[in-house]
Image 1 (tube, rainbow, N blue to C red):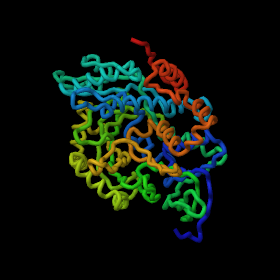
Image 2: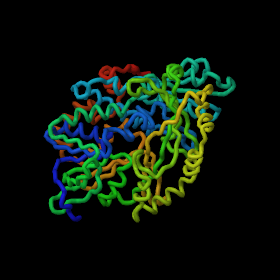
Image 3: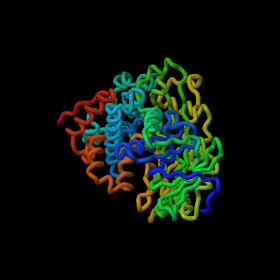
Image 4: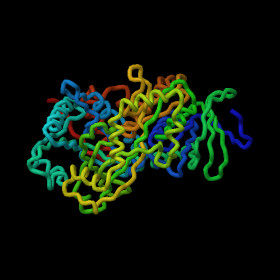
Length: 507
């Protein structure tokens, strides 16, 4: 790689690419674990959390598996698989511990700015779906993580819980719902910006907005990695060397990971899925709904398209959204380029991408149908959850982009993954986060996994172990296996974050 004559060199210990929730979480954790680390953060846009972490772009807030039905699939024998739901619920409790720690330390000032309590509900109709939800309820209540979940098929009870959903509905329609009162709404945009605001005031941390990372390569002469960054305001080129790089650029992570040319990245591809919301304009309607109500996804649809009638707090104001409606764009970021997908196709991933496409024809059909939807089609989908909805009370809002992971598979050739995945070099010197849901809600657990991969010696040191237990009191122990520990942890975090806690008592 030839040097540019106008290159300006710097050499921080850590480089974080992307100013979203993942980079914010990792940056804060590293500075808490080792305060003398120097960190450079590079963001292409002029503000933090403007892509997937932003409240208007994020497909789901406060994912804790209380209401997301795609986390509890039905097995061929009719039983319900709960492993993923339990893992996500536990991971969200870990995230809450870290946020509570930051509040207690004075690092974050005001919990209600980013997290509030709101019921999480699943709602279905039709005999088969009601049977499924009843079985899901019976399966999940075996785990103390889901203690307090309520189930009802009584229209009168449901009308009290979710009046907008029940008013105007055919009384002969068979319906059911579950409800978890300790659900939360998390504004990850507000949380991320608060974390970066504090992080950039710490010694040794430099944030660079409007800086686009153009290239990444191993530094043969100096060791470590180099990145080439362009200042989009001045067009100045900067080369930066670092011993560790984290690529947390949302949908843009794949292209940068490919540029690194590490063997572990070969065979990975990405499938972009765009989204849209219907945003309620009628304040009277907004005030009548107080829940996150999730339904079942259409056959062939991606998990990010699970329909929900969703109460959120955005900018200090209560909002009501329905969607998301899926679509297709070759952009990997909302503010990206239509060439993102074509440029991501390489010799080492073209076969997995083609095979994944062949195995997901229903998804392709679904996305085409979504793109061709009319306003009337969107209103029809909304009326499944809000029978009395009128189009004049809603407007279309563009949501963020998601890039689902495509990876090699020995049996299938290539598979489409609907989760998040950390890809790292064998020596732990570079790592990237790919994928989408559940993403932000499990950021702390994802970053703990990254620390294990990339900083194993330091992680095993007495100093880091002690500090991690201060940051995350349950660290090294299983909340899923220990109901008393969960109760203790939930009590503390709920008090700090201003949330209620369901008191677990053994049956």
